[in-house]
Image (cartoon, rainbow, N blue to C red; front, top):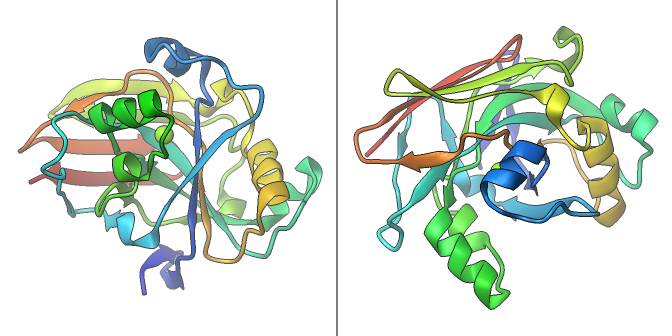
Length: 216
Ligand code: MG
C-alpha cells in the first residue's frame, strides 16, 4: 500500500488524477491547443516517490521532463460536486512533480494512443508531505518554483491556472468518483525541461512546502 503523509498521519493513496494543459504559457511552449474541456489522465499510486528519493528514468526514453504542480489530497468522497462545494473535499495540499517522458508522449500523441507509458512509470510522481488545507489561505495564489542543480527552471503562480483547483475537482468528479486518499495534480506552469542522470531537483510551493529528489 502506498501512503502519503498529512500532518504526520499516513494516508493510503487511491488514484492520482492529473490535469494537462492548465496554464496558457505552458500550452504555448509545447505548441499544444487550448482544450475546451480539462485534459485528464491518471498515474497509479506506484508512481509516487517521497522527498529524498531517486528518480529512475526508464531505459525506453531519452527525454524525461520535469513539471512542478500543486497537488490536492481528497479527504472525503466527491461525486459530481459543484465548484462551490469542491474545496470542502480537499484535506491537504502538497508539492508534486508530474515527470513526463516527452519523447514517448509525443510518439503516443502522434499515433492517438494513451499517455500512461510516458506518464505513469515508477517514480514519475515525486510528492512532498501534505499540509492541511485549512493552513492554505488561497490555493489560487501560490508561487511555484522548481530549481535544478541550483538553476531556476520553473517559476509560476497558481493564479495563472486556466481552471482553478475547485473547477478541476468539480469537473473530474463529474466523470468519476473521487475518494479519500485520491490525489489531483493541477497542471504545470511554463518552463518544463529535460532532467538528466545526477540532477538534483528542488521544488517549492509557498505555504505548502518543498520536495527534493535526485535522478539516478
Ligand atoms: Mg503535468
